[in-house]
Length: 596
View 1 (tube, one colour):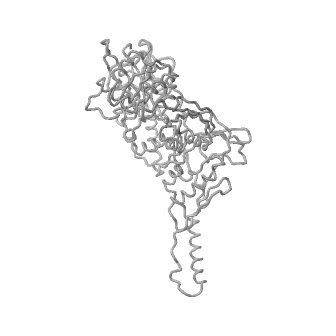
View 2 (cartoon, one colour):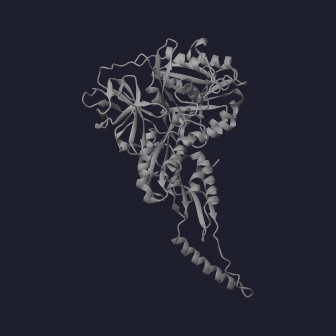
View 3 (cartoon, rainbow, N blue to C red):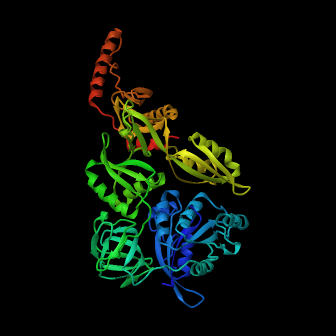
């Protein structure tokens, strides 16, 4: 165990984690030059296309130190985007040390700070690394001072490096061996391991990844998952190289995988404790906290017959993405589907895309919203995830909405536009701290519902990409919210309902009506699109009918002859309108998200 080191890489998005991980793999000869490709550990097409890490990836390396001993290094490369912070918290729970990577051209950003706090909570040894030192725009003195202010280290502890040129990679490996503590554990104690990730393989069932804390596990032993109380035989165990590497035994301090022919996704829970049936451990490991979804949206199959298939797909996806939460629900407009909880809009987009690519499921996503607490007049209160569950206004006392505390770090030139954006989103300024003469940290309290749609995109565009944003929940507050319904020919489309602040409802209703007018195809009869709060209509647009000129054959003569033909046509249209229903295209549901 003295020769094992477990560490992860944490940083803000785009600070060069995956590129640096590639250099570490090359330096330790874990992969040959032939196997190397850009971002070797990002194995999903989506990750490569977007240039972001979505999943954390574990890999084992071996490195011979200057003292002649060979060390086993278990590395976990983590995502940088705030929507995937749950992946980061799970990786941190399985490690003793962390490489904190900071871009020498950008400096410290919001997600760097929040990931650092996660690591400090778990008492990890932090090794600061200044990346991208080979760029002309690098500013190591200023950024170095920022790191020293943040974690209180010495200047000599900061390692200058470059993922592109390979500068400083040897120093990083030396620092990991010398500064990260070896894992603690007792190889003679009963076997105890924490499951920190799992994937589904269509040939071999579920593969669970775990970190051994105490004891030893041999191949073909009976193992038991404590929270589900199910027992299996360990068909294959081993460590995680670029491919799975089978081994006969795994002992305390190791990070490995187990294949035991589990087919049902519900039987493996991330954060569960794994033990041996013959000599079980007495207590479960305190895993990581449960995930708190921030954004809720309905996901429905386009064809209602695909409902069961969608359920299987979601369960398999949940194995690989533990922050996805879902439960069945039904809608009058869309049939049966699922109410899903996501950590943010990017997370929602990625889940939708993965369902389409990996499981060939075409799905409809409803307007995302957050969860509210409704207090009714008899003193009860309950959580509302779907606007259609809101009680009638005569029973409702008041509604509370979730607030967040957001940290925005930006260049001082952009303070004005950033502040006005936050105030427009009903934010209240809490503090303003200058980190240096150039950079300022703004802390706002804001309603979560306001940042769900496009806040992050707007923030990036007004600050030319310099501002970084991070947030955490900050309780609930009473708010003047109303339920906005969209009606088509008097019928409510429940998938387009939204809970919104009364001051913004009129503008929003008008915008939705205009957008739907563009997107809904014209019918044989006139279609009225209305936005309503309760029984009060606040906006209306009409889609005119596609009509045939019935008076073409009627030339000359009295006007009553033409009127008679028009009245006859009008009666037909009226009958058609009573029978016909208006189809809302999928693009209309998505367009409501991108109204601005």
